Amino acid sequence: MRSSPGYLLFILEVVLLLGLVAKEVSASWWFISQLNIHALGAGVVCDNIPGLVGRQRRLCRHHPDVMVPLSEGVRLGVEECQFHFRNQRWNCSTLERDTSLFGKVMLRGSREAAFVYSISSAGVVHAITRSCSRGQLMHCACDPTKRGSGRDKRGAFDWGGCSDNVRYGSTFSRMFIDAKERKQRDGRAMMNLHNNRAGRRAVKKFRKLECKCHGVSGSCTIRTCWLAMQEFRLVGQHLKTRYNGATQVMMKQNGASLIVADKNHKRPTRSDLVYLESSPDYCVENSEVGSLGTTGRTCNKSSMGTDGCDIMCCGRGYHTRVVKQHYKCECKFHWCCFVHCKDCQRWVELHTCKGPAPQGLIGS
Image (spheres, helix red, strand yellow):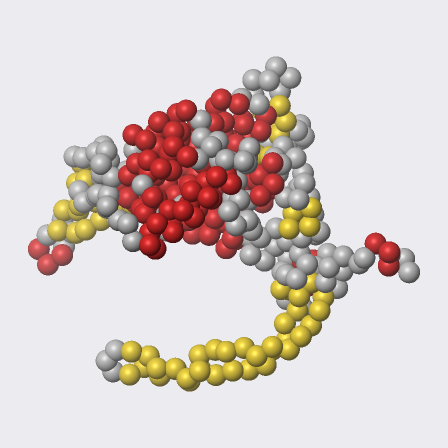
């Protein structure tokens, strides 16, 4: 058993952290992504995080090996979210040691919450499926249904290799992530369930058939094929497009389902994202709506897009300062096999958004 001072200090820090979490009523399964499960052990995680419902805790205890890719999947979703929203007022910021990972933005049924739920769900499916294919999980491996022969537009082929078991990743994700929402059954829970499912479907959508040819001189008279997930960036791009076209919905009077808020809009499919409330403008810091504001954010003076200073700074103006920027230059390839670059520097203008004017100065 490990008993080094460093490890004991790490355990003490985690115990204190879990103690702080216990005071938070908003604690959720997302918090698993902020813990080092390899070092702690899934048992410690499963038994000490408040906010998990009974089924989540049981799955956590019975499948400790899956908790590692599950936490990796959440981080994958967060990174993808931050990539796609890096140039917008809401940039998918996470708050350090916040039990809901995204602060109070998750309390609103906005488009942003819809994207977070869908990309998190997709990330978990992707990470668990990848672990299955790598043989890292006890109860799943390659897709067992991809056996025998198949056919595509090029003709017949034999199933072989290791097809990604997206079915297992999707099923576990649904059982674990959806468990809490299924106990609520209110409008927000229905919204979350819909967007969780859209995320899972996005991973299934972006799979491709990969094949290896066999025959004399690679003639490809026989093909062995397997179904593989594509890079997660494609899933993120797809869900970002769904975010842009998300449908506003509301609770049906009988409380049994969601309906479109505007009758002139089409009914969303299972792959679309849905939201309940309009988004705030995210211009100023407001903890009640989950906005961190854009004060101090870097903007592009010459851009007319969302990263431009006019839009990013919400018309408040911006500060300009000249800073020294380091970069690699005069790179040369040397045989064999490395690239050598010089360290260069240049002075560039950096623009950052101003904050709101003090109340007493308005109109003065």
